[in-house]
Length: 340
Ligand code: PEP
Ligand code: MN
Image (cartoon, rainbow, N blue to C red):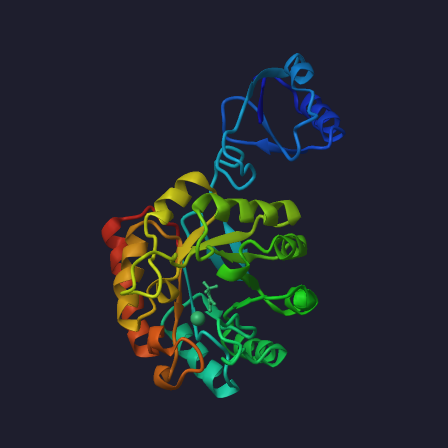
């Protein structure tokens, strides 16, 4: 619920009210930007003495927020969230591209790709060290050795690294070494992991589950926020539908829907979203036109021998041309973007 306070409420009086509300077992958040000061109340409100609070002299009226997510929603936080990672920025008008292989395979491979994508203007290096694979016989990633190689690539190129965590046992290593912690589609509703990763307070890339609704994605973000981080980037990565021509169906409409419902930056993954390298470019451009704050794209120097997702990986050369087209689409739709 939202407490709309009287316009003349003083800062001191508001602070006292916040302290009182916090003793009632709920979380309290100041909402800025409206004509009146407002407080967002989230958490378990079943025992919240709403009638008493409504009679408080500072309170003008109480609004009920219909959506089950509160802190991830725009009603509690009307302004766009800007996620900053070193020099890289995403959200609030800043556009970013994350690129790199599905999996880190060797030092030569990750360094070669990292240098190429950095030269083409990518903002983040992606690469899986711990891979969720449908088959127990498929390449599971290099694990902690893969993390070490990502660190070398970061050091050589300056690109912050984005990589997926699969288990709580690696929280410490990720807290120390990873710039943006990815929670993959298959773990989007691993609520323990969400709480634990949120508590690290680091930026998180949260991918939409294969069969999850937009509301479920936002509820997963709410877990992260309640855990302790608001630096969350949401990712539409394709959902399961009856269509078999593509690996998944990239839900482009999720981008403007999310942009309306949440303050968090929203990116698209046309690689997993389609499953085919030749579909990556058209869907990347479509996602930009639909208002995405960024993209995550699989790039491999030798896709034909990639240990994972080669069929949907584009080469550094194709990526280079795509980056130019992305700029043109952004200019064409004339988004009121800040400097990237
Ligand atoms: C990935 O980014 O390599 C990945 C496994 O993504 P998703 O969780 O979306 O399948
Ligand atoms: Mn992949």
